[in-house]
Image 1 (cartoon, rainbow over the protein chains, first blue to last red):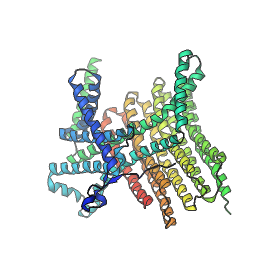
Image 2: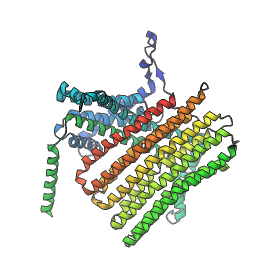
Image 3: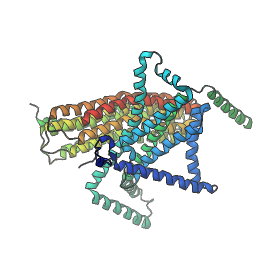
Image 4: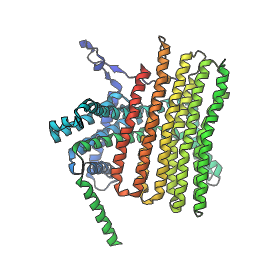
Length: 294
Length: 317
Protein backbone atom coordinates (compact mmCIF):
# COMPACT_ATOMS: atom_id res chain seq x y z
CA UNK A 1 0.00 0.00 0.00
CA UNK A 2 1.46 3.31 -1.06
CA UNK A 3 0.06 6.72 -0.35
CA UNK A 4 1.27 9.80 -2.15
CA UNK A 5 1.41 12.77 0.19
CA UNK A 6 4.21 14.91 -1.16
CA UNK A 7 3.24 14.59 -4.80
CA UNK A 8 3.01 18.24 -5.72
CA UNK A 9 3.73 18.89 -9.37
CA UNK A 10 5.89 22.00 -9.51
CA UNK A 11 6.22 23.91 -12.80
CA UNK A 12 8.83 26.64 -13.22
CA UNK A 13 7.58 29.06 -15.89
CA UNK A 14 10.66 31.34 -15.86
CA UNK A 15 13.20 28.56 -16.27
CA UNK A 16 14.13 29.64 -19.82
CA UNK A 17 15.23 33.01 -18.43
CA UNK A 18 17.66 31.29 -16.10
CA UNK A 19 15.58 31.85 -12.95
CA UNK A 20 15.65 28.49 -11.24
CA UNK A 21 14.70 29.63 -7.73
CA UNK A 22 12.28 27.48 -5.69
CA UNK A 23 10.32 30.60 -4.94
CA UNK A 24 9.23 31.03 -8.56
CA UNK A 25 7.80 27.50 -8.83
CA UNK A 26 4.07 27.10 -9.40
CA UNK A 27 2.10 24.24 -7.86
CA UNK A 28 0.13 23.53 -10.98
CA UNK A 29 -2.49 21.21 -9.44
CA UNK A 30 -3.35 23.57 -6.60
CA UNK A 31 -3.63 26.43 -9.08
CA UNK A 32 -6.02 24.44 -11.28
CA UNK A 33 -8.18 23.40 -8.32
CA UNK A 34 -8.33 26.98 -7.03
CA UNK A 35 -9.48 28.16 -10.44
CA UNK A 36 -12.08 25.40 -10.44
CA UNK A 37 -13.29 26.56 -7.02
CA UNK A 38 -13.51 30.12 -8.36
CA UNK A 39 -15.54 28.93 -11.37
CA UNK A 40 -17.88 27.08 -9.01
CA UNK A 41 -18.32 30.18 -6.87
CA UNK A 42 -18.92 32.36 -9.91
CA UNK A 43 -21.47 29.96 -11.39
CA UNK A 44 -23.23 29.88 -8.01
CA UNK A 45 -23.44 33.68 -8.19
CA UNK A 46 -24.89 33.52 -11.72
CA UNK A 47 -27.47 30.92 -10.65
CA UNK A 48 -28.36 33.10 -7.67
CA UNK A 49 -28.79 36.12 -9.93
CA UNK A 50 -31.15 34.17 -12.17
CA UNK A 51 -33.26 32.91 -9.29
CA UNK A 52 -33.40 36.17 -7.36
CA UNK A 53 -35.28 37.79 -10.23
CA UNK A 54 -38.15 35.37 -9.71
CA UNK A 55 -40.30 35.97 -6.69
CA UNK A 56 -40.85 33.41 -3.95
CA UNK A 57 -38.81 30.37 -4.83
CA UNK A 58 -36.87 28.02 -2.51
CA UNK A 59 -33.47 28.36 -4.25
CA UNK A 60 -33.37 32.10 -3.69
CA UNK A 61 -34.39 31.52 -0.07
CA UNK A 62 -31.36 29.28 0.55
CA UNK A 63 -28.95 31.90 -0.83
CA UNK A 64 -30.71 34.68 1.05
CA UNK A 65 -30.48 32.72 4.30
CA UNK A 66 -26.75 32.17 3.80
CA UNK A 67 -26.11 35.87 3.18
CA UNK A 68 -28.44 36.91 5.99
CA UNK A 69 -26.62 34.64 8.42
CA UNK A 70 -23.27 36.30 7.71
CA UNK A 71 -24.88 39.74 7.69
CA UNK A 72 -26.35 39.22 11.16
CA UNK A 73 -23.07 37.80 12.41
CA UNK A 74 -21.18 40.92 11.25
CA UNK A 75 -23.81 43.33 12.56
CA UNK A 76 -23.75 41.71 16.00
CA UNK A 77 -19.97 41.62 16.16
CA UNK A 78 -19.08 45.07 14.83
CA UNK A 79 -22.13 46.81 16.35
CA UNK A 80 -21.66 50.57 15.96
CA UNK A 81 -18.54 50.19 13.78
CA UNK A 82 -20.41 48.18 11.14
CA UNK A 83 -19.74 49.02 7.51
CA UNK A 84 -20.65 47.03 4.42
CA UNK A 85 -17.03 46.84 3.31
CA UNK A 86 -16.19 44.69 6.34
CA UNK A 87 -19.15 42.47 5.56
CA UNK A 88 -18.04 42.01 1.96
CA UNK A 89 -14.47 41.15 3.00
CA UNK A 90 -15.58 38.66 5.64
CA UNK A 91 -18.11 36.96 3.37
CA UNK A 92 -15.53 36.73 0.58
CA UNK A 93 -13.15 34.90 2.89
CA UNK A 94 -15.90 32.57 4.08
CA UNK A 95 -17.29 31.61 0.67
CA UNK A 96 -13.88 31.31 -0.99
CA UNK A 97 -12.52 29.02 1.75
CA UNK A 98 -15.69 26.96 1.73
CA UNK A 99 -15.62 26.47 -2.04
CA UNK A 100 -11.90 25.58 -1.90
CA UNK A 101 -12.72 22.86 0.67
CA UNK A 102 -15.84 21.54 -1.06
CA UNK A 103 -14.18 21.27 -4.47
CA UNK A 104 -12.50 18.07 -3.19
CA UNK A 105 -15.84 16.27 -3.47
CA UNK A 106 -15.63 16.30 -7.27
CA UNK A 107 -13.98 13.31 -8.97
CA UNK A 108 -10.23 13.61 -9.78
CA UNK A 109 -10.07 16.87 -7.84
CA UNK A 110 -8.43 17.49 -4.46
CA UNK A 111 -8.99 20.27 -1.97
CA UNK A 112 -7.13 23.47 -2.82
CA UNK A 113 -6.77 24.24 0.91
CA UNK A 114 -4.68 21.04 1.25
CA UNK A 115 -1.70 23.13 0.11
CA UNK A 116 0.04 25.22 2.77
CA UNK A 117 0.53 28.09 0.29
CA UNK A 118 -3.22 28.62 -0.17
CA UNK A 119 -3.99 28.64 3.55
CA UNK A 120 -1.02 30.90 4.27
CA UNK A 121 -2.30 33.33 1.65
CA UNK A 122 -5.74 33.34 3.25
CA UNK A 123 -4.32 33.82 6.75
CA UNK A 124 -1.94 36.61 5.78
CA UNK A 125 -4.66 38.33 3.74
CA UNK A 126 -6.97 38.56 6.74
CA UNK A 127 -4.04 39.66 8.94
CA UNK A 128 -2.98 42.42 6.53
CA UNK A 129 -6.56 43.64 6.15
CA UNK A 130 -6.89 43.95 9.93
CA UNK A 131 -3.64 45.94 10.12
CA UNK A 132 -4.77 48.19 7.26
CA UNK A 133 -8.08 48.95 8.97
CA UNK A 134 -6.25 49.62 12.23
CA UNK A 135 -4.02 52.22 10.57
CA UNK A 136 -6.92 53.75 8.64
CA UNK A 137 -9.14 54.19 11.69
CA UNK A 138 -6.62 55.11 14.38
CA UNK A 139 -3.69 56.57 12.48
CA UNK A 140 -0.04 55.56 12.29
CA UNK A 141 0.90 56.82 15.74
CA UNK A 142 -1.74 54.81 17.57
CA UNK A 143 -0.84 51.76 15.51
CA UNK A 144 2.79 51.88 16.64
CA UNK A 145 1.88 52.83 20.17
CA UNK A 146 -0.12 49.64 20.54
CA UNK A 147 3.01 47.54 20.00
CA UNK A 148 4.77 49.24 22.91
CA UNK A 149 1.99 48.51 25.39
CA UNK A 150 2.48 48.12 28.53
CA UNK A 151 6.28 48.83 28.31
CA UNK A 152 8.57 49.67 25.42
CA UNK A 153 10.69 46.59 26.26
CA UNK A 154 7.88 44.29 25.15
CA UNK A 155 8.01 45.50 21.52
CA UNK A 156 9.60 42.32 20.05
CA UNK A 157 7.23 40.12 22.05
CA UNK A 158 4.20 41.97 20.68
CA UNK A 159 5.46 41.73 17.11
CA UNK A 160 6.05 37.97 17.44
CA UNK A 161 2.61 37.60 19.01
CA UNK A 162 0.98 39.33 16.03
CA UNK A 163 2.90 37.20 13.53
CA UNK A 164 1.97 34.02 15.41
CA UNK A 165 -1.68 34.80 14.65
CA UNK A 166 -1.00 34.32 10.93
CA UNK A 167 0.81 31.04 11.53
CA UNK A 168 -1.93 29.68 13.77
CA UNK A 169 -4.75 30.71 11.43
CA UNK A 170 -3.19 29.23 8.31
CA UNK A 171 -1.84 26.05 9.93
CA UNK A 172 -5.18 25.27 11.58
CA UNK A 173 -6.96 25.22 8.23
CA UNK A 174 -4.10 23.35 6.53
CA UNK A 175 -3.83 20.66 9.21
CA UNK A 176 -7.52 19.94 9.37
CA UNK A 177 -8.11 19.72 5.64
CA UNK A 178 -4.97 17.66 4.99
CA UNK A 179 -5.95 15.30 7.84
CA UNK A 180 -9.37 14.76 6.29
CA UNK A 181 -7.85 14.24 2.85
CA UNK A 182 -5.36 11.67 4.22
CA UNK A 183 -8.12 9.70 5.94
CA UNK A 184 -10.02 9.49 2.69
CA UNK A 185 -6.86 8.57 0.74
CA UNK A 186 -6.20 5.71 3.15
CA UNK A 187 -9.75 4.47 2.79
CA UNK A 188 -9.59 4.68 -0.99
CA UNK A 189 -6.28 2.83 -1.12
CA UNK A 190 -7.63 0.16 1.17
CA UNK A 191 -10.67 -0.20 -1.06
CA UNK A 192 -8.66 -0.24 -4.27
CA UNK A 193 -7.04 -3.51 -3.18
CA UNK A 194 -10.50 -5.10 -2.91
CA UNK A 195 -12.09 -2.85 -5.53
CA UNK A 196 -13.86 -5.55 -7.55
CA UNK A 197 -15.07 -7.37 -4.45
CA UNK A 198 -16.51 -4.14 -3.13
CA UNK A 199 -18.27 -3.18 -6.37
CA UNK A 200 -19.79 -6.66 -6.71
CA UNK A 201 -20.83 -6.61 -3.06
CA UNK A 202 -22.49 -3.19 -3.38
CA UNK A 203 -24.36 -4.05 -6.57
CA UNK A 204 -25.55 -7.41 -5.19
CA UNK A 205 -26.81 -5.72 -2.01
CA UNK A 206 -28.64 -2.99 -3.90
CA UNK A 207 -30.21 -5.31 -6.50
CA UNK A 208 -31.33 -7.92 -3.98
CA UNK A 209 -32.71 -5.22 -1.69
CA UNK A 210 -34.98 -3.86 -4.42
CA UNK A 211 -36.03 -7.33 -5.64
CA UNK A 212 -36.80 -8.58 -2.14
CA UNK A 213 -38.60 -5.35 -1.32
CA UNK A 214 -40.90 -5.83 -4.32
CA UNK A 215 -42.03 -9.37 -3.51
CA UNK A 216 -41.93 -9.48 0.28
CA UNK A 217 -43.20 -6.94 2.75
CA UNK A 218 -39.95 -6.39 4.67
CA UNK A 219 -41.65 -4.74 7.61
CA UNK A 220 -43.09 -8.11 8.62
CA UNK A 221 -39.67 -9.78 8.87
CA UNK A 222 -37.86 -7.59 11.32
CA UNK A 223 -34.53 -9.41 11.32
CA UNK A 224 -34.25 -9.45 7.52
CA UNK A 225 -35.18 -5.79 7.37
CA UNK A 226 -32.53 -4.95 9.99
CA UNK A 227 -29.88 -6.98 8.13
CA UNK A 228 -30.59 -5.24 4.83
CA UNK A 229 -30.52 -1.82 6.46
CA UNK A 230 -27.12 -2.59 8.00
CA UNK A 231 -25.74 -3.68 4.60
CA UNK A 232 -27.10 -0.54 2.96
CA UNK A 233 -25.47 1.60 5.65
CA UNK A 234 -22.15 -0.18 5.02
CA UNK A 235 -22.35 0.49 1.28
CA UNK A 236 -23.06 4.15 1.78
CA UNK A 237 -20.53 4.59 4.61
CA UNK A 238 -17.67 5.29 2.21
CA UNK A 239 -19.55 8.13 0.59
CA UNK A 240 -20.56 9.29 4.05
CA UNK A 241 -16.96 9.57 5.26
CA UNK A 242 -16.04 11.76 2.32
CA UNK A 243 -19.15 13.86 2.86
CA UNK A 244 -18.22 14.27 6.53
CA UNK A 245 -14.66 15.36 5.90
CA UNK A 246 -15.52 17.31 2.76
CA UNK A 247 -18.56 19.29 3.80
CA UNK A 248 -18.68 19.22 7.58
CA UNK A 249 -14.99 19.70 8.32
CA UNK A 250 -14.62 22.23 5.50
CA UNK A 251 -17.63 24.20 6.69
CA UNK A 252 -16.52 24.22 10.33
CA UNK A 253 -12.95 25.24 9.55
CA UNK A 254 -13.94 28.01 7.15
CA UNK A 255 -16.44 29.23 9.74
CA UNK A 256 -13.73 29.28 12.42
CA UNK A 257 -11.41 31.22 10.09
CA UNK A 258 -14.19 33.73 9.42
CA UNK A 259 -15.02 34.07 13.12
CA UNK A 260 -11.38 34.73 13.93
CA UNK A 261 -11.15 37.37 11.20
CA UNK A 262 -14.30 39.08 12.50
CA UNK A 263 -13.08 39.00 16.08
CA UNK A 264 -9.60 40.33 15.34
CA UNK A 265 -11.15 43.05 13.17
CA UNK A 266 -13.69 44.08 15.81
CA UNK A 267 -10.95 44.17 18.47
CA UNK A 268 -8.81 46.31 16.16
CA UNK A 269 -11.65 48.74 15.46
CA UNK A 270 -12.27 49.30 19.16
CA UNK A 271 -14.50 47.78 21.77
CA UNK A 272 -18.26 48.18 21.56
CA UNK A 273 -19.72 49.54 24.77
CA UNK A 274 -23.03 51.28 24.09
CA UNK A 275 -24.26 48.64 21.63
CA UNK A 276 -24.74 45.95 24.28
CA UNK A 277 -27.16 48.15 26.20
CA UNK A 278 -29.14 48.72 23.03
CA UNK A 279 -29.34 45.00 22.49
CA UNK A 280 -30.67 44.39 26.01
CA UNK A 281 -33.25 47.16 25.63
CA UNK A 282 -34.48 45.57 22.43
CA UNK A 283 -34.96 42.23 24.16
CA UNK A 284 -36.83 43.67 27.13
CA UNK A 285 -39.19 45.49 24.75
CA UNK A 286 -39.94 42.21 23.01
CA UNK A 287 -40.62 40.55 26.35
CA UNK A 288 -42.98 43.35 27.33
CA UNK A 289 -44.90 42.93 24.06
CA UNK A 290 -45.24 39.20 24.62
CA UNK A 291 -46.43 39.83 28.18
CA UNK A 292 -49.07 42.25 26.94
CA UNK A 293 -50.24 39.70 24.37
CA UNK A 294 -50.36 36.89 26.94
CA UNK B 1 17.26 -11.91 26.84
CA UNK B 2 14.24 -10.06 25.43
CA UNK B 3 12.97 -12.52 22.87
CA UNK B 4 10.83 -11.06 20.06
CA UNK B 5 8.17 -13.68 20.78
CA UNK B 6 7.86 -12.36 24.34
CA UNK B 7 7.21 -8.80 23.10
CA UNK B 8 4.77 -10.08 20.47
CA UNK B 9 2.57 -11.97 22.95
CA UNK B 10 2.85 -9.06 25.42
CA UNK B 11 1.46 -6.77 22.72
CA UNK B 12 -1.44 -9.13 22.06
CA UNK B 13 -2.30 -9.14 25.76
CA UNK B 14 -1.73 -5.44 26.43
CA UNK B 15 -4.13 -4.41 23.65
CA UNK B 16 -7.17 -5.93 25.32
CA UNK B 17 -5.93 -5.52 28.90
CA UNK B 18 -5.40 -1.73 28.61
CA UNK B 19 -8.70 -1.28 26.80
CA UNK B 20 -10.68 -3.23 29.37
CA UNK B 21 -9.63 -0.92 32.25
CA UNK B 22 -11.42 2.13 30.88
CA UNK B 23 -14.36 0.21 29.47
CA UNK B 24 -15.07 -1.31 32.88
CA UNK B 25 -14.88 2.05 34.64
CA UNK B 26 -16.94 3.78 31.94
CA UNK B 27 -19.74 1.23 31.92
CA UNK B 28 -19.80 1.38 35.70
CA UNK B 29 -20.24 5.16 35.65
CA UNK B 30 -22.98 4.94 33.02
CA UNK B 31 -24.98 2.21 34.75
CA UNK B 32 -24.59 3.84 38.17
CA UNK B 33 -25.99 7.15 36.98
CA UNK B 34 -28.80 5.42 35.06
CA UNK B 35 -29.94 3.63 38.21
CA UNK B 36 -29.66 6.87 40.16
CA UNK B 37 -31.86 8.60 37.59
CA UNK B 38 -34.37 5.73 37.66
CA UNK B 39 -34.76 6.02 41.40
CA UNK B 40 -35.28 9.78 41.11
CA UNK B 41 -37.86 9.75 38.29
CA UNK B 42 -39.87 6.57 37.81
CA UNK B 43 -42.09 7.89 35.01
CA UNK B 44 -39.14 8.22 32.62
CA UNK B 45 -38.20 4.58 33.12
CA UNK B 46 -38.37 3.43 29.49
CA UNK B 47 -36.47 6.39 28.12
CA UNK B 48 -33.70 6.19 30.70
CA UNK B 49 -33.35 2.45 30.19
CA UNK B 50 -33.08 2.92 26.42
CA UNK B 51 -30.50 5.69 26.80
CA UNK B 52 -28.45 3.47 29.11
CA UNK B 53 -28.46 0.51 26.72
CA UNK B 54 -27.54 2.58 23.66
CA UNK B 55 -24.94 4.56 25.60
CA UNK B 56 -23.25 1.50 27.05
CA UNK B 57 -23.12 -0.06 23.56
CA UNK B 58 -21.22 3.04 22.38
CA UNK B 59 -18.88 2.85 25.39
CA UNK B 60 -18.14 -0.76 24.52
CA UNK B 61 -17.23 -0.13 20.87
CA UNK B 62 -13.62 0.81 21.78
CA UNK B 63 -12.81 -2.54 23.34
CA UNK B 64 -14.41 -4.35 20.38
CA UNK B 65 -11.98 -2.65 17.99
CA UNK B 66 -9.13 -3.52 20.39
CA UNK B 67 -10.29 -7.14 20.35
CA UNK B 68 -10.30 -7.16 16.54
CA UNK B 69 -6.73 -5.81 16.43
CA UNK B 70 -5.62 -8.31 19.05
CA UNK B 71 -7.11 -11.23 17.09
CA UNK B 72 -5.48 -9.97 13.88
CA UNK B 73 -2.10 -9.87 15.66
CA UNK B 74 -2.58 -13.35 17.12
CA UNK B 75 -4.00 -15.22 14.11
CA UNK B 76 -2.99 -12.85 11.27
CA UNK B 77 -0.01 -15.07 10.67
CA UNK B 78 2.22 -15.35 7.65
CA UNK B 79 4.93 -13.14 9.12
CA UNK B 80 7.99 -14.40 10.94
CA UNK B 81 8.30 -12.38 14.13
CA UNK B 82 11.58 -10.49 14.29
CA UNK B 83 12.67 -7.85 16.79
CA UNK B 84 11.61 -4.77 14.70
CA UNK B 85 8.16 -6.23 14.07
CA UNK B 86 7.72 -6.96 17.78
CA UNK B 87 8.71 -3.35 18.65
CA UNK B 88 6.20 -1.98 16.13
CA UNK B 89 3.51 -4.25 17.58
CA UNK B 90 4.08 -2.71 21.01
CA UNK B 91 3.27 0.65 19.38
CA UNK B 92 0.03 -0.76 17.94
CA UNK B 93 -0.95 -2.21 21.31
CA UNK B 94 -0.34 1.05 23.16
CA UNK B 95 -2.22 3.13 20.57
CA UNK B 96 -5.37 1.06 20.41
CA UNK B 97 -5.40 0.13 24.11
CA UNK B 98 -5.01 3.64 25.47
CA UNK B 99 -7.45 5.04 22.89
CA UNK B 100 -10.09 2.47 23.86
CA UNK B 101 -9.65 3.30 27.56
CA UNK B 102 -9.80 7.05 26.99
CA UNK B 103 -12.86 7.06 24.74
CA UNK B 104 -14.86 4.76 26.97
CA UNK B 105 -14.29 6.90 30.06
CA UNK B 106 -15.00 10.07 28.04
CA UNK B 107 -18.22 8.84 26.47
CA UNK B 108 -19.51 7.43 29.75
CA UNK B 109 -19.80 11.01 31.04
CA UNK B 110 -22.24 11.77 28.22
CA UNK B 111 -24.41 8.83 29.33
CA UNK B 112 -24.17 9.97 32.94
CA UNK B 113 -25.38 13.52 32.38
CA UNK B 114 -27.96 12.48 29.76
CA UNK B 115 -29.58 10.11 32.28
CA UNK B 116 -29.59 12.84 34.92
CA UNK B 117 -31.18 15.31 32.45
CA UNK B 118 -33.82 12.76 31.48
CA UNK B 119 -34.77 12.32 35.11
CA UNK B 120 -35.18 16.10 35.41
CA UNK B 121 -37.15 16.50 32.15
CA UNK B 122 -38.71 13.15 31.18
CA UNK B 123 -40.86 14.62 28.37
CA UNK B 124 -37.83 16.05 26.61
CA UNK B 125 -35.82 12.84 26.58
CA UNK B 126 -35.93 12.19 22.82
CA UNK B 127 -33.91 15.32 22.06
CA UNK B 128 -31.50 14.72 24.93
CA UNK B 129 -30.92 11.23 23.51
CA UNK B 130 -30.10 12.77 20.10
CA UNK B 131 -27.57 15.12 21.69
CA UNK B 132 -26.02 12.25 23.64
CA UNK B 133 -25.66 10.11 20.50
CA UNK B 134 -24.05 12.99 18.61
CA UNK B 135 -21.53 13.63 21.40
CA UNK B 136 -20.71 9.96 21.74
CA UNK B 137 -20.24 9.41 18.02
CA UNK B 138 -17.77 12.30 17.88
CA UNK B 139 -15.93 11.02 20.98
CA UNK B 140 -15.44 7.70 19.14
CA UNK B 141 -13.06 9.37 16.63
CA UNK B 142 -9.73 8.68 18.49
CA UNK B 143 -10.22 4.93 18.58
CA UNK B 144 -11.21 4.88 14.90
CA UNK B 145 -8.05 6.83 14.06
CA UNK B 146 -5.98 4.46 16.22
CA UNK B 147 -7.57 1.52 14.40
CA UNK B 148 -6.71 3.01 10.99
CA UNK B 149 -3.12 3.73 12.06
CA UNK B 150 -2.75 0.22 13.47
CA UNK B 151 -3.90 -1.34 10.21
CA UNK B 152 -1.49 0.84 8.22
CA UNK B 153 1.40 -0.06 10.54
CA UNK B 154 0.54 -3.72 10.09
CA UNK B 155 0.54 -3.51 6.31
CA UNK B 156 4.11 -2.13 6.49
CA UNK B 157 5.43 -5.31 8.14
CA UNK B 158 7.97 -7.21 6.08
CA UNK B 159 10.79 -9.63 6.89
CA UNK B 160 13.39 -7.07 5.76
CA UNK B 161 12.33 -4.44 8.31
CA UNK B 162 15.37 -2.90 10.02
CA UNK B 163 15.42 -2.02 13.72
CA UNK B 164 15.27 1.70 12.85
CA UNK B 165 12.10 1.24 10.84
CA UNK B 166 10.63 -0.74 13.71
CA UNK B 167 11.28 2.14 16.12
CA UNK B 168 9.84 4.54 13.52
CA UNK B 169 6.58 2.58 13.46
CA UNK B 170 6.59 2.57 17.28
CA UNK B 171 6.87 6.38 17.16
CA UNK B 172 3.77 6.55 14.93
CA UNK B 173 1.89 4.48 17.49
CA UNK B 174 3.13 6.60 20.41
CA UNK B 175 1.99 9.76 18.62
CA UNK B 176 -1.63 8.54 18.52
CA UNK B 177 -1.34 7.11 22.06
CA UNK B 178 -0.45 10.45 23.62
CA UNK B 179 -2.63 12.44 21.23
CA UNK B 180 -5.90 10.68 21.98
CA UNK B 181 -5.74 11.35 25.74
CA UNK B 182 -6.31 15.11 25.64
CA UNK B 183 -9.23 15.20 23.16
CA UNK B 184 -10.97 12.41 25.07
CA UNK B 185 -10.71 14.28 28.39
CA UNK B 186 -11.86 17.53 26.79
CA UNK B 187 -14.72 15.89 24.91
CA UNK B 188 -15.80 14.06 28.06
CA UNK B 189 -15.93 17.26 30.10
CA UNK B 190 -17.81 19.06 27.33
CA UNK B 191 -20.28 16.23 26.64
CA UNK B 192 -21.03 16.03 30.36
CA UNK B 193 -21.95 19.70 30.55
CA UNK B 194 -23.77 19.95 27.19
CA UNK B 195 -26.11 17.04 27.98
CA UNK B 196 -26.70 18.47 31.45
CA UNK B 197 -27.33 21.98 30.07
CA UNK B 198 -29.99 20.65 27.67
CA UNK B 199 -31.76 19.34 30.76
CA UNK B 200 -31.44 22.65 32.63
CA UNK B 201 -33.17 24.77 29.97
CA UNK B 202 -35.01 22.98 27.20
CA UNK B 203 -35.76 26.25 25.38
CA UNK B 204 -32.04 26.70 24.69
CA UNK B 205 -31.76 23.25 23.10
CA UNK B 206 -31.26 24.44 19.50
CA UNK B 207 -28.52 26.85 20.53
CA UNK B 208 -26.76 24.20 22.62
CA UNK B 209 -26.97 21.74 19.71
CA UNK B 210 -25.23 24.02 17.17
CA UNK B 211 -22.77 25.14 19.84
CA UNK B 212 -21.80 21.58 20.65
CA UNK B 213 -21.31 20.56 17.00
CA UNK B 214 -18.88 23.42 16.34
CA UNK B 215 -17.06 23.10 19.66
CA UNK B 216 -16.58 19.36 19.40
CA UNK B 217 -14.98 19.85 16.00
CA UNK B 218 -12.65 22.49 17.51
CA UNK B 219 -11.73 20.31 20.51
CA UNK B 220 -10.94 17.43 18.15
CA UNK B 221 -8.50 19.54 16.05
CA UNK B 222 -5.26 18.48 17.88
CA UNK B 223 -6.20 14.85 17.30
CA UNK B 224 -6.28 15.45 13.55
CA UNK B 225 -2.80 17.04 13.83
CA UNK B 226 -1.63 13.87 15.62
CA UNK B 227 -3.05 11.73 12.81
CA UNK B 228 -1.24 13.93 10.30
CA UNK B 229 2.14 13.57 12.03
CA UNK B 230 1.57 9.86 12.53
CA UNK B 231 0.95 9.31 8.80
CA UNK B 232 4.01 11.48 8.01
CA UNK B 233 6.14 9.30 10.30
CA UNK B 234 4.91 6.07 8.72
CA UNK B 235 5.39 7.11 5.09
CA UNK B 236 8.62 9.12 5.30
CA UNK B 237 11.59 6.83 4.64
CA UNK B 238 14.50 6.42 7.05
CA UNK B 239 17.61 7.76 5.24
CA UNK B 240 20.44 5.30 4.68
CA UNK B 241 23.00 7.83 5.87
CA UNK B 242 22.67 8.50 9.57
CA UNK B 243 19.56 6.40 10.36
CA UNK B 244 19.98 6.72 14.14
CA UNK B 245 19.47 10.51 14.29
CA UNK B 246 16.45 10.49 12.04
CA UNK B 247 14.83 7.71 14.07
CA UNK B 248 15.31 9.79 17.21
CA UNK B 249 13.77 12.73 15.31
CA UNK B 250 10.69 10.67 14.45
CA UNK B 251 10.28 9.58 18.09
CA UNK B 252 10.59 13.14 19.38
CA UNK B 253 8.19 14.46 16.72
CA UNK B 254 5.54 11.97 17.81
CA UNK B 255 5.97 12.80 21.49
CA UNK B 256 5.96 16.57 20.77
CA UNK B 257 2.59 16.67 19.03
CA UNK B 258 1.14 14.13 21.47
CA UNK B 259 2.07 16.25 24.47
CA UNK B 260 0.92 19.37 22.64
CA UNK B 261 -2.53 17.88 22.19
CA UNK B 262 -2.81 16.84 25.83
CA UNK B 263 -3.18 20.19 27.56
CA UNK B 264 -4.77 22.21 24.78
CA UNK B 265 -7.72 19.90 24.15
CA UNK B 266 -8.42 19.52 27.84
CA UNK B 267 -8.59 23.24 28.44
CA UNK B 268 -10.57 23.88 25.24
CA UNK B 269 -13.11 21.40 26.60
CA UNK B 270 -13.16 23.18 29.98
CA UNK B 271 -13.81 26.56 28.36
CA UNK B 272 -16.59 25.15 26.19
CA UNK B 273 -18.26 23.39 29.12
CA UNK B 274 -18.42 26.57 31.23
CA UNK B 275 -19.81 28.49 28.28
CA UNK B 276 -22.43 25.78 27.66
CA UNK B 277 -23.85 26.09 31.19
CA UNK B 278 -23.98 29.84 30.75
CA UNK B 279 -25.92 29.49 27.48
CA UNK B 280 -28.46 27.32 29.27
CA UNK B 281 -28.86 29.97 32.01
CA UNK B 282 -29.05 33.01 29.70
CA UNK B 283 -29.77 32.06 26.06
CA UNK B 284 -30.22 35.71 25.04
CA UNK B 285 -26.46 36.31 25.41
CA UNK B 286 -25.68 33.44 23.01
CA UNK B 287 -23.77 35.45 20.38
CA UNK B 288 -21.31 37.11 22.76
CA UNK B 289 -20.71 33.85 24.64
CA UNK B 290 -20.14 32.00 21.37
CA UNK B 291 -17.68 34.57 20.06
CA UNK B 292 -15.73 34.66 23.32
CA UNK B 293 -15.50 30.88 23.43
CA UNK B 294 -14.25 30.57 19.85
CA UNK B 295 -11.63 33.27 20.44
CA UNK B 296 -10.44 31.67 23.68
CA UNK B 297 -10.19 28.29 22.02
CA UNK B 298 -8.23 29.83 19.15
CA UNK B 299 -5.70 31.19 21.62
CA UNK B 300 -5.49 27.88 23.47
CA UNK B 301 -5.12 25.81 20.33
CA UNK B 302 -2.43 27.99 18.84
CA UNK B 303 -0.15 26.18 21.34
CA UNK B 304 -1.00 22.87 19.68
CA UNK B 305 -0.26 24.49 16.34
CA UNK B 306 3.24 25.52 17.50
CA UNK B 307 3.79 21.89 18.51
CA UNK B 308 2.58 20.83 15.03
CA UNK B 309 5.04 23.20 13.39
CA UNK B 310 7.99 21.82 15.37
CA UNK B 311 6.84 18.24 14.82
CA UNK B 312 6.63 18.74 11.04
CA UNK B 313 10.13 20.25 10.99
CA UNK B 314 11.46 17.35 13.07
CA UNK B 315 9.78 14.72 10.92
CA UNK B 316 10.87 16.00 7.52
CA UNK B 317 14.41 16.89 8.61
